[in-house]
Image (cartoon, rainbow, N blue to C red; front, side):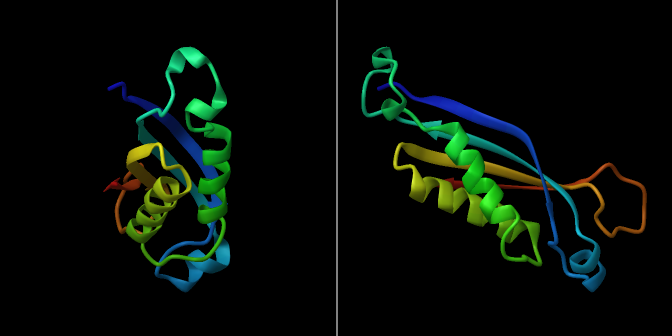
Length: 121
């Protein structure tokens, strides 16, 4: 059996997630990485988009989720992305999704806060 991984790295979106009212009011950039483990139904030698996951469509699904409904936790956001991608694309057997929040309201100096969720079908 052949498996492979499609990675969408550092997808950037402006959104309004977070616990604090200021985070909803001001918004900020969020960054998403998605590692999608794929089990093709046709041989890859067919060289056909039908035998894989269209990563352009996967990006649009991520964008729709991140820029949609406000989430208080980036954990919940990452989980929703992973579940939706696996549901939308039956060839995905595992989705590992990381969400980074560079401007997290933390009393200290850091580059970002990141959460990673894995969803296995």
